Image (cartoon, rainbow, N blue to C red; front, side):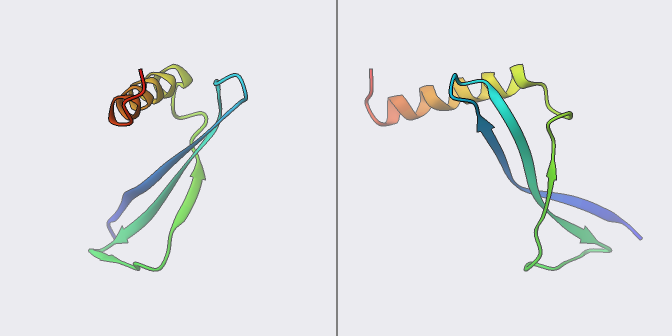
Length: 72
């Protein structure tokens, strides 16, 4: 029986000062080539991701959005 995690969404919550508060991964499971498109699973990934890496990704994302919104 082969299982595979199919990531859907990584949700990160921040404290008021901008530091990472928590993070969860929403995902689906494909088992033996079949996946129930109606089911999503959620698991905390706080201990699996370094906060500094999330901060770096967030900073790059914000910078990208600022350019798109023409915010200088």
